[in-house]
Length: 416
Image 1 (cartoon, one colour):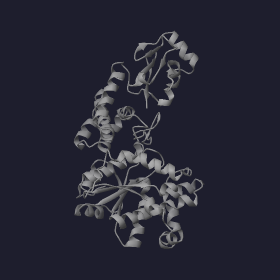
Image 2 (cartoon, rainbow, N blue to C red):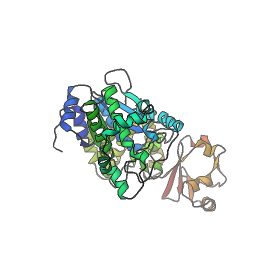
Image 3 (cartoon, one colour):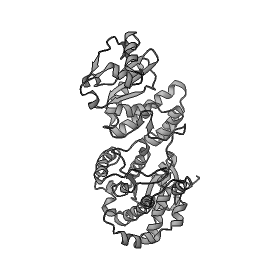
């Protein structure tokens, strides 16, 4: 892309690698250059927390505010009842209203770490599309809004077409999702003057629908901007680790394990992730990303500290780095340690060291774990384990512990 932006926001999006596509580069850039411009991203409430895959969108909203514009975080209290079918092989499970409200309460916690909600010109808005979707009259909606949509065109969108081409069922309920999302954009423009929507590149069709609908109904010009769908250098989708989803809420994933996820970034992704997920100057991101050999590890620690500081605060980042140094470096362990996270209920009555060896994957059975201990093949925090009847309680897991099998196999155990 050879476009040279005038506005600071567009420059950041292009220089730091966020931008995948835009419906009208010049039009959006001109709007941003004229003054405070409201922009939104929608988040459906399908879980109690967002995961790392949503962090690029949250950082885009942060940059909206940092460059002098107004971010809108739209909770999908209404659209979650339908479920976005985009590039899914099957229908999302339907959630009750109580589940959706509970999920929204969990999701909202994260945004305040990144965005300031106040009454100022660039103060963020937290909205819920149930406010206008729940009260829609079906017949009026069909007549006033449905008539602007061509089924032929809707069937041509890649997110729908790919499902049909694979002969996978697409319910009428899901087919309505793109109309509801388009209507969101119309309502946000009408009520709050919102001028552009952002989202992952899989949302392109939904965004374009909203622009077309708003032009037809209100005769207003609005814009769309998409980011790359984030994958790691080996092609894996961002948001997952070997132990499951990398959640953003501290009660679903500890700050330590969040820190460790970023510390384990591959060499090839380090520079790119520094640009996307931190606010370090681009020149510094390039310098750190170009480090070779063992030196790249210092860049990964900076990445982990910066990302963790934004979400959980600087103190959590410092504590995580100190814990990692104690657990890994002093014990001579590499940085790819598998982690077992226990809940308080898991250890309410204590948990035996034998169970921990099995749960962490270091032993295939209780019998093998006991044999390992009896043959001096197991260690706890680098000290030999000799008592197979040892039971650990919550106080013993105030800090993560390291279990070892022989010299090369290790696991971390922590309380979530």
